[in-house]
Image 1 (tube, one colour):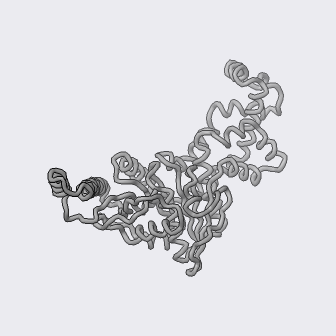
Image 2 (cartoon, rainbow, N blue to C red):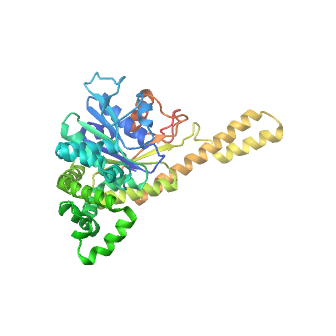
Image 3 (cartoon, rainbow, N blue to C red):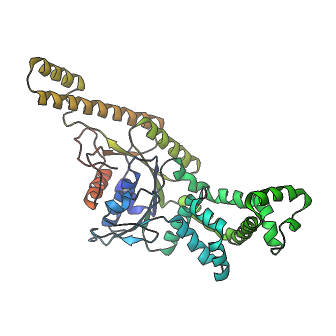
Amino acid sequence: MKSVDVDRLVDTSSIIVCCGAGGVGKTTTSAALALRAAERGRKVCVLTIDPARRLAQSMGLTELDNTPRAVSGVDGAAGGSLDAMMLDMKRTFDEIVLSHAEPQRAQQILANPFYISLSSSFAGTQEYMAMEKLGQLKATGNWDLVVVDTPPSRSALDFLDAPQRLGRFLDGRMIRMLLAPAKAGGRGVMKVFTVGLNVVTNVLTKVLGGEALRDLSLFVASLETMFGGFRERADQTYRLLKEPGTAFVVVAVPERDALREAAYFVERLAAERMPLAGLVLNRVHASAAPDLSAQRALAAAEALDQSGESALTAGVLRLHAERVLAATRDRRMAERFAGAHPAVPVVQVAAQASDVHDLDGLRQVGAELASGYDAGAPDRGRRAG
């Protein structure tokens, strides 16, 4: 099983994108990689799109928002620094409008009820804004490395489709119909549609109301004026994701569903020809006494029970047996994934007893990532959550 050279990864990459199913330790992995890179001398910004706010807690920040904030307590002896932020989807969209539309037009767009709905909850907006924010961060030139913690589940890779999906939305037949009232200068909705479109317009007017339909058409017209810039920037970021300085890290745990999702990510990235650095396999179990098999431990525990001797020792033996079985299962799951994807490097992180909640915990996870965890060694004590 090939291993990931984590120190080389954080020393040479300009973008690291961590993706994977929910609940596999993706946020902690992102933060640990970012912290290790910073303490090795790089200027790093970590962007989380996960609404779980765990990143802020682990870095000792009271909150994260759409502005990068310096993380205190980072060892800057090597000259590095670490900033962290959480994507605010609507604020990012607002910033785009304000920077790419004239002030009066921008205020009209921001006040439009359809814009408010789109920027807050429209399907795919979060992924598009993630791509937009990543492009903005890179364009500033303020950081050597940007680490992106993506949303859980397969939607984490939806930003790869963002330019095409936005194009299909604005190029669609319904959108072209809705543009007609605005292009006619705001004169009556019914007069500007051809006879063949009157039926559709009547339906929309009954459902939305004439004023709402006018708001929608005006909003679409406003959005159309900025669409070229949307597409261009998204395409630029998409190309950036394929450059040699970018690396995708897939995060999973040694469980069937999580590894199935990991396989999906690996195969999708390969299909898109995106640079995959490898798989981080979190929460791998091990035993402090691997030479004592589960069968022998259970037999010894049963003997102690029958003799009426130490119940505590019998309990310890049963716990050891459970850990050995878990370690065996984890090893088999890892080997099965490696067999199906032999070209994908893998690095393992130990199953740990508690959540990572501070920089020391992140340092420990980062060190484990860099050293290549040995599943035959004892567990360490914290959980890569």
